[in-house]
Length: 92
Image (cartoon, rainbow, N blue to C red; front, side, top):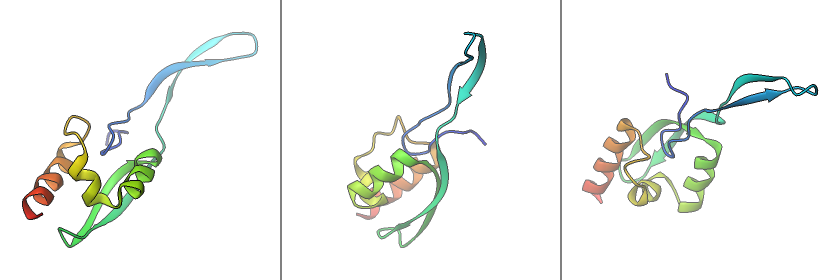
């Protein structure tokens, strides 16, 4: 499983861990991901998605997963979420 947000496309960043002596060691900065199940009112079922904390706040701000997916760009979404978006647009 990839460590990638399915709604925003956030993925790990590469960088260095720098010691006090300025020694640099390669490391990765992972996004804060959570497995969340959203209740879709249009589809009338639960949708389980791996989401970053920032995306979770955005979904709450937009008023739910249905409203978020209606306005989201397809480039950032995963293939699984694109299918949900297509179903939501057809039913609404």
